[in-house]
Image (cartoon, rainbow, N blue to C red):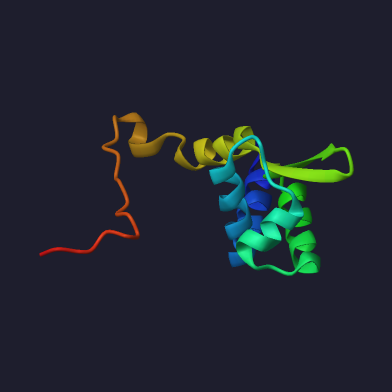
Length: 111
């Protein structure tokens, strides 16, 4: 993956609404969602959502598929994985890395 592709993907994800849209499509999986479904789930106006979907699509992170009269957007998992692979390439100078797990947002911190 080229550095320019990584920059486009990260720039597209650097907006809170686009990040929410992308995460919703990742959670949904390959079946994807229509723009109407995304508007309802994320409470984003249709015109605004259209702009964000265009930006994510231009970055290669989502792809629209026509299904009759509807467009169905789905996350492009290969591209997402390529971005992650680029960011973690040569991690820890080739040594086995100990994975760090992020705490879940719903877990309470206990001391």
